[in-house]
Image (cartoon, rainbow, N blue to C red; front, side):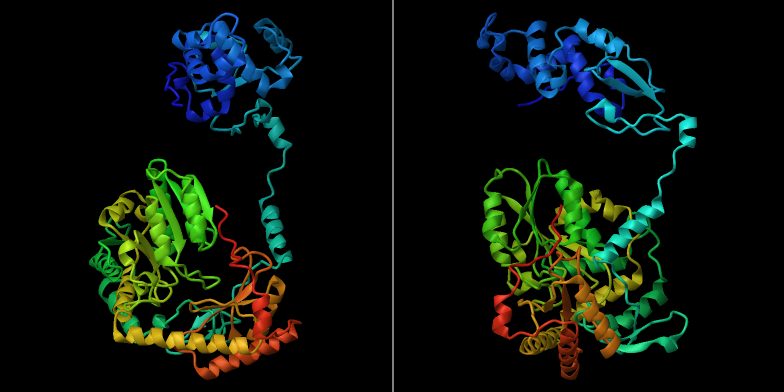
Length: 596
């Protein structure tokens, strides 16, 4: 039912916050005395009037639909609704009884109060003045009003004397309690200080002291997202040096205010060509790209719904949550469940289906073309996160979309420059009108300093390498190392979570043990792997996440497998055969991300 728009010349003096804080009380009082609210109530409650039965003695339902309702008829509807919501006032028979209760204060005033600031002029509404509703003034610049249905829950202003006797909130105690809680459940994270050494990838230096390099030691890194080692590629380093020499270190401002350079436009052109799209837009990170794009689209599209994979990344969840549009969460990579949800939404309603191609924590790869076809069949546009796929799949490194030859079906692609491309930053690619819309309305793009020339130059070089024979050779070598490592881990009896991608998760299932395993690997064998725990994955599904690169050797692989076998048994875990592992594989991806 369409609700009429009725403007009250008196209440329009109030701010939106003030009206929201007092809305139920204003309506309760106004419906009985104000012609505007009476008209509003009549249009909203016509169907309810027919159901009350109270009007059957004086008029038929058809006549009540054709003529203005009388005050008594409006009151009948109002009293029925009022009785359902406020049983404690059901015995009140008349306005006189209400006034008596209000003035004697023997019982709560059912009409409540209107809360306004002291700066607001008196409400000259004659209808509200004829009711016992209270008018309470507060200093809006000094006190905060809690918006609640019940006036009893309103935070009352305090006097200077009262303030002197009230202790301030203990902020540090609060922070400490929350940190201690994370330490108790073993989800507290301690960062390892790792210094990458140019030319030594995948090895680095663990720094135990920031002041003394002698305290460092050489370690082998097995958890880097620099999947192809491009972060230390000679061409990348040269591009950075040339850029800082020619242009300096900073960008100079936002894209709108002196922060757009030829390098920005060249990079966006190259990204668009990589993904075979009309246009692209670069962001300071892919978190910002996902958050900004999903929020901006969902908020702007009229009546938009979002259908989101249960394993989506936190950046996507944040954008969805902030948009506050209706959301529907489908099981991870479950096309049937997605279609089931899509069927419930009319085709003409704008819809966004958001998901990832390669899942970062379980290594699964979606059936991309099937997902796209189902989404489009029900009138949706698709938002596909290719963060862990760009640079690694497809002839030119454009991701799963290129590998599966479905780039033309993908509406919006998001990717990163900070993983396989060895730099930093994120982007979206799609139709020119869509990217121009995000450029014009996306606050996460508009109000942030643009990426500096060093980053732009390195990213341009990374895409150039990715599209070359060298890039294809690096991808082949990485996949060979992934297959070798996965096979040897399984043969060793370690519980590898099977996946078709380059990501190799090893299930542990206990946060404390996962951390202990990583500490033993680092301290005893100089091998660095980071445990993955809550909130990245659900409690009970903690794991080690291993990423092989083209530069890991067979000797390094053997050292890792041997070390893992020893520390695994040292912490009390059991090595199992492949058949035993298959029987105990976790049911699906237990990744705690979708709580939007």
